[in-house]
Length: 317
DNA sequence: CATCAGGGCCCTG
DNA sequence: CAGGGCCCTGAT
Image (cartoon, rainbow, N blue to C red):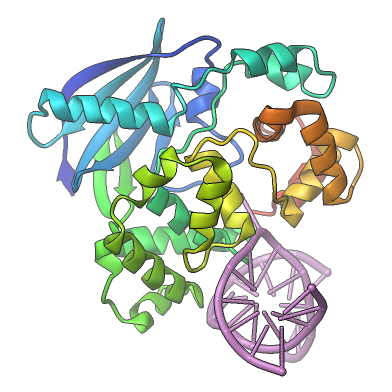
């Protein structure tokens, strides 16, 4: 168990509009002991250069204040790197003014856009870490994903006590390289064990993969992602939006999202995916995935204080 | 008890 | 390019 001490505070300015809660807390995400959110903000361990830093994000008048926790004092260059990394992962550098203007006048988006104005696509994880999560999402139900995630964190993750929360940093790819397939399968991840071994090997051998992808346009990044074993259309879609912040990454709509978007956009149980995509790209253009994200998170948030039977039925935790 | 799809993807024919 | 197989689980 790592004992992390408060070391520094970073102010990150964010261009308006900005919605702190909508950015750091995504109601649609499955629960995992890798981050926590409450009255005292967002807590998560973040890996940088082989070190684990505890982070606490809170809203500030100019954007975000990030408190950094570490075992030892953190020098200025590391703080700069952490600031840049937090800014990227939480989409704090994005200019959403164009989207806000468009969404305010859009009949489908209006309500969600008002409520969450300035919400950004965000992901506290590195690309490798998010890829591990999407691997756990593949071809299963959420309840099993939660179990697999927990057992892998307990076995390979790094326990961190942070803000009174018992959290885990996701394992580094090096940890899974060279282990026996059977060892992973014992955690009941099934055929995904092979994917974990292959992607971990890939990331160890391509340490700058994520940085390289951040520089690429969407199609080029998608192509590189597809070359990674275990990454198909659904996973690419998650990674392009949540990790790489492509606001128009709506090439793929998987069955679960299809059902939910059919309700949210057409008030209908099931609309063909081509129709959903066509509508979204026509109406929302370069922001089509961001728009879908607003509808999605707003629905999951509403669900926490009003009854939405059709959504309850689709979640089945 | 058995069956089966689930927030995919790989591989084969 | 279609479709079978894959690990395991809980819903039926």
